[in-house]
Image (cartoon, rainbow, N blue to C red; front, top):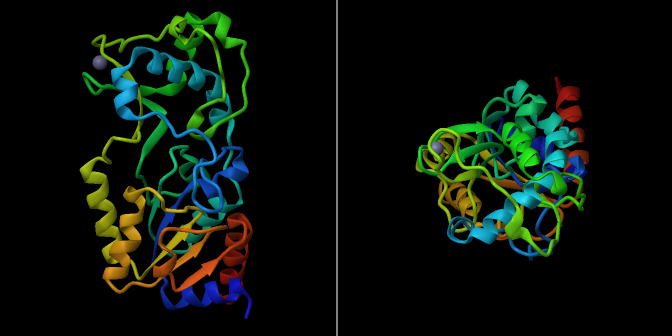
Length: 276
Ligand SMILES: [Zn+2]
């Protein structure tokens, strides 16, 4: 039996899935990931909440790189995996699609039952008055204030970042909140920051309703994601994973497929169609 046939059997036995996705579903869309097949960092770790809010130069460096990296994120299109998962939902197999990605590509592909565990990079939040605004509007303002930087290019990095180096990040001009003058931050959960409680509660409620869990394109090295397979295992729900390389949940899995996620999900959706 091929691994796809095994996955089809898994889905037939457990038709309602709690799905958790990670960076591996978006790499085909040109958005790099942070970790190698062993789950180790393959690039410098992302900025922490404490450094972003506490250090002026770190914050300017973040926004300068973000301004250069934004077009890659803004122009990214859903890949095979996103499309297949939207089809799987349409066929009634998705209780919840919980994603650790901040790129919004699941929604763009047509998935509706989604929770963005770590927030969305296309939204900006004021840390003082909580006003949310589109990242695209801030992009215009950043470019207006920093014309010399606007022409710079750098290799795309994860989460809308770019590998931009500069000897004077302190000269990068970042606007305050237009409503209250407070500090702006991307509406994503940084390292050192907690996931909002209501998001976690809603995700656990969906997990309770689901028949099984499917992990896709994530090594689950971050606890905010890893706690879900832990809870699924405790509840006696079977767990499958499609991921090239090690995951932190490997000893909890009843099925693991180590092939490109888009390829496997495409075959799964096709195979499910053939059954009907
Ligand atoms: Zn504000």
